[in-house]
Image 1 (cartoon, rainbow, N blue to C red):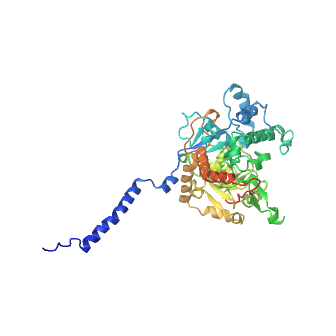
Image 2 (cartoon, helix red, strand yellow):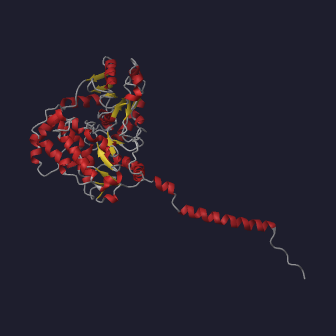
Length: 470
């Protein structure tokens, strides 16, 4: 009998083993291709942030508007328009949501009004809104505190400015206390220590008496200027250097825009600009305003530069509109605080902002690239004689046109108003309110981590605030 031939040669064995090895890999890659990449899934933006509103008394929000418009008049500068509204429109507004004050001192901080108006809007009308109101704390990502903190502070300054820094006889302090005491009794506050609560504190003097108590929360502020303190130990009492107070941080808080006071200029209506640089405002300010005073003295007599002292009341507003719309650049030096509504008026006027600051916080950075439409200048450079003028003259018409085209693209981003009574109604999907809520949403993982860390802390152990990181 002939022996059976060995049909399993070495080459065929190699091929068989190769197939057996490749098959599991093929199955793995096939499975992977049909399974979403978790890394990509985590980076996908959600459609909304879920917001719960605690049931604070109406006297702490819209009731303050009732009180404001019931005043006989406001004698402060800039109140002329509001005094006229009191005579003509407000008496006929019974039962309706009242407008926010037009006085520039108050209007520039009106974010509280527009954000709450969006949340109060019927769900059927909330087209394009990133914030979704929920009616269960357990379902919420954050708790929005419906307190008009700016209006409360300004009401006190109108009625009795003398007691503003005191507690006795101070209605604003009583309202602040009412808000904080109410919240601290809720399970939501006890659960998170307030870390998932959102306060609108745009006016630097708002919530002045309770800042330390609301510090753990997510604060919507125009900048950190009202939260600075002197680091006397580090400076040995000899240096004016300021440090960020531990109550605020870009890690948890959100920088929001001022409400602009000047109307928007469409790019299609832009005309030739004859003035090189324009500034309108007070020369003498506190704190960081020393730079403004020095710049004023350097620039006041320079050809092609307009430096006007004034305030945006009815007359000043028209002057500002004309000045910004006919100037290539608009100066933005620090005043009482690092920023002001002047920056956002410049954007709406297509006047290229010249931001003179070494330390400034700006709204929506990471979403908006300010270098695409603004010029940033170091204080040391700006204070050199003729440096700033020569620098601005070095920009070509093509560069300036590009700045203005980019500015026109971001004009809607710095818009709160929706033209609806009480601010209640559909909002622009690309406006300030949605950008604010998207920024808050970015903070959620860190906020949730902080809440969990707080839960496992042993009783009696205190952890110092560490919010110096920017």
